[in-house]
Image (cartoon, rainbow, N blue to C red; front, side, top):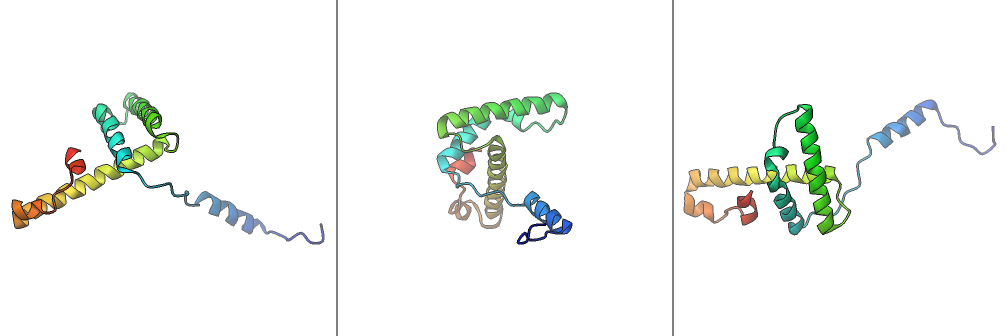
Length: 129
């Protein structure tokens, strides 16, 4: 054994590899509105495929193919920074945000009426999808 080499126990090695497995991914830059609009427009073209709940091999393969096309088109416009997984995650976030904003808007209509609800009406982007 070398004189100044620190000893590492097998448990320490396991601990380090476990920490590496669960390391948080590095945060990317925020999505610009024009990126979101582009993603929305690309997804709209094949919305019936993207939102198909089928889990059979054919549906899954078709969804994968459509997402690859969306990714390719998105990258033509914005460059090579966003992966397919990041596009899919953003799509899910956009849908969830839209759903919540619309629920909130309709709740305000029920509680306070159209006029008051329209003071905090969802923006055109939300209303569009």
